[in-house]
Image 1: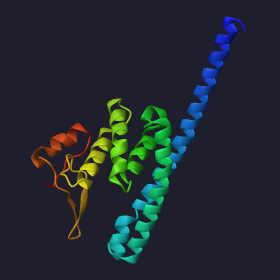
Image 2 (image 1 turned 45 degrees about the vertical axis):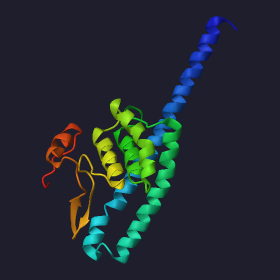
Image 3 (image 1 turned 30 degrees about the horizontal axis):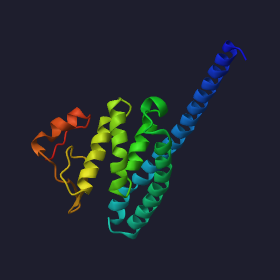
Image 4 (image 1 turned 90 degrees about the horizontal axis):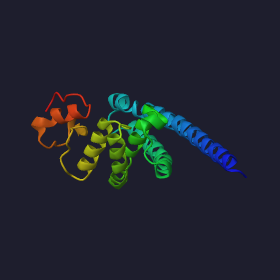
Length: 189
């Protein structure tokens, strides 16, 4: 086989591999977008269920069980995707699918999972491939779950039937920090 033939075969192989990877990214994107819609549909029922039946109701318990099952199944898929392909950026799978990677890891039951994948999200943000607000939100969740004050004020909990933020480090400058990562201003501090 001559030199030009070898080069042609190599180029065909590279193009084939690229097309295969592109098709793989497309199928991952489609699955991630479906997961996002399913997650939003389930979580969209939380406040209406609380308003209608109360936070301690059997209806809310049932919804929480469905959300936990969904999150567990989705997490298996997300971990496989990230472990195989890395934290896929917006240019590879689109903004919605990229956000789904964040959402599913964010909802993981163990903080160790968030801690393990946070550096990948952080690197993706530095490359402009993921949102700063997602990174800030996950950072806050990690801190709160470790019993530390959050930085951006993204994490809240119910206190006497009202959403209250968990403690915030240097609360007087929280809105400056929020602005830097694309989060809106906190009105109630």
